[in-house]
Amino acid sequence: AKPEQPEEQPEEIKMSIYEAIPFEDRLKVKLEQESYKSLTERDSKRKRGTQMHKVFEYIISHADVERAVAKTIREGIILESEKESLIEMINAKISAPHISDWFSSENEIKTEPTILSSYTYRPDRIVITPSNSVIVVDYKFGDTKEKHYEKQVLEYMNVIKKMGYSDVRGKIWYAMLD
Image 1 (cartoon, rainbow, N blue to C red):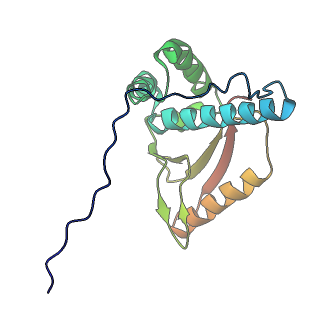
Image 2: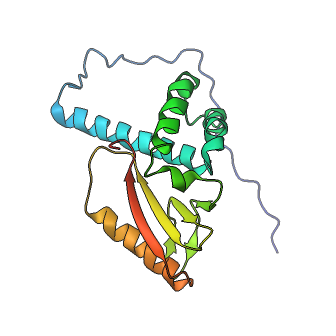
């Protein structure tokens, strides 16, 4: 066997000055265009939805709200300046009579669980009551209701029924519209 030859390295050239031509005067982007605004607004709403999903992933019961917000701040997901208003908003939302039971410490709660079947499913929240009924909750943080979300929740419900639960209900929670 031949001895390996060291790979030839290109000669290193050090530059003390690197000149570039400023592009600001030659390139203009029209940020005022409606298509750009709607794109950035959509991205901003999507980002906010992702942030809120992360906060809610850490909330098992009502008592967890402050801890969940603090954790997402430490992770760099939420800004410190949003802390108080976010805690207040979440507490108000999850205290609503038709939502409150989903955050009751009397229930067994699974947040963002991975369910393996013929596909991989990951519902936002599964609530198992003391009577063994199951509520699958899918959070939506946007400002529009869409029909295809129902299909997603039905799929979650069917896979949970296959796991042996007979009383399975599904809920889509449009948190920002509630």
